[in-house]
Length: 499
Ligand code: NAD
Image (cartoon, rainbow, N blue to C red; front, side):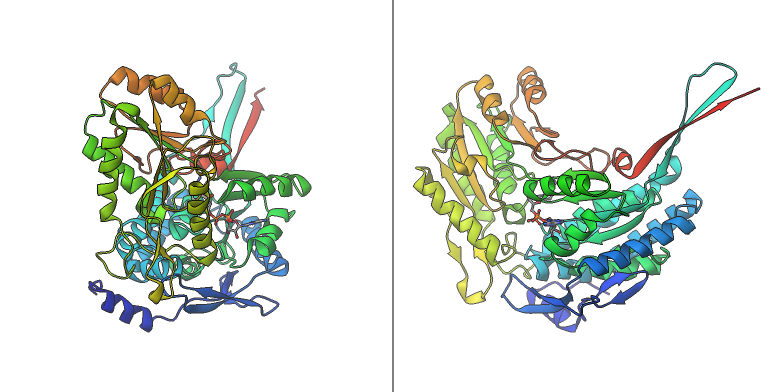
């Protein structure tokens, strides 16, 4: 079947879909035990897409019970690694085979342009699964350097029941960064998608089953953070909580862990990433295009968005103008039109938050250089132009707080030391970029930056081979790469003394 190529064809496909709306527990789609639902609305036009099961504590309890039982019986963890690998590769293939439908669910549900759902989110989730699955039968344990009459074996074991609580900005991709290594390591998983974007997670539950993942091993619980999310985080029989979301929620999860069973908690949280452009950058046009993309991709709703653009003062005006020009390619359009690069903000709440930050930045004395207006009101959806502010001081709210929207703060600096000091003057430490032709300056700056990812002469580089995660209040633990297995396995030392 060929993919739709026009907005009308995507709309026709949307009209033909039966949208998933029930929770998936122990291999079955079920309503919430209370019968409660919540309205899942599209930011494209405010239209209700589905009434989705609103899971609560009792549903969490059911899912945890099923996941525990599957773990204890060993139907998944005791499979030979090569067999688990085969099933997960099949799961990845099924995601690829259903790419158009899954991409459409992402776009309808959270507003991102279909071209990116189709080319980035869904293939990215499938690639995460296949890369991780391929690793299963290639990761070895260790033998300790012991005396001759002893054998010390260091092995990894799955943890048990892993709850994955994820956000809405890349619904399936962020989820896959958690559930793929958790499943690969032999755990049972309960996936809690964001209440703002539950559809793709619900749809892949049946693909997991079709691929051969045993009942109870992969469960999906839609609902609110304050109810089902909290219930999972406090549950005494959840062994590990893998979270991506805001820093505020991340802190709360640490409390829940301490109040319950001291479950492992892995946090991937917010950011306020500095993008440092020195006057000797190798290609200012390329750097400007990257800076525009770093604030506009996914409507700025990216944890690593380059929200603080630190520009050497000698090129400040010239470079800001280049970024402004480059932003012309990132203007709001119909997310279902394959030509659109900039879609809708996820919902009314986030839309208001973005507009509030724009108003606050102006009150604080920053200059709105371009954009920042709400547009397309006739659509009924949530559309705003990307905005650039100049004259920003690092003490302003716009430079300190995560907007999670397309609002760029331009800050000028004079020396490399000042750039590093400004960059590190943040509670966050997720990512940072440096643009310079001077290899010494590049290395020294990269080393001084307190961030989990540093990009030199690019923005947002990396693939499955490199770990991803934050310093400071951007979290801890690493998604992607073999380091991801560290989060979902316990290390056991078995010591044998020979006669
Ligand atoms: P959020 O913290 O509001 O919600 C994230 C998830 O946590 C949702 O599923 C939500 O229902 C759940 N939740 C909320 N309160 C909870 C509670 N008390 N107990 C248990 N679960 C709860 O974040 P969001 O608005 O969905 O996502 C945006 C945030 O995610 C931004 O801060 C962004 O930087 C961050 N993010 C980080 C990364 C990363 O890898 N570091 C990647 C993507 C997004």
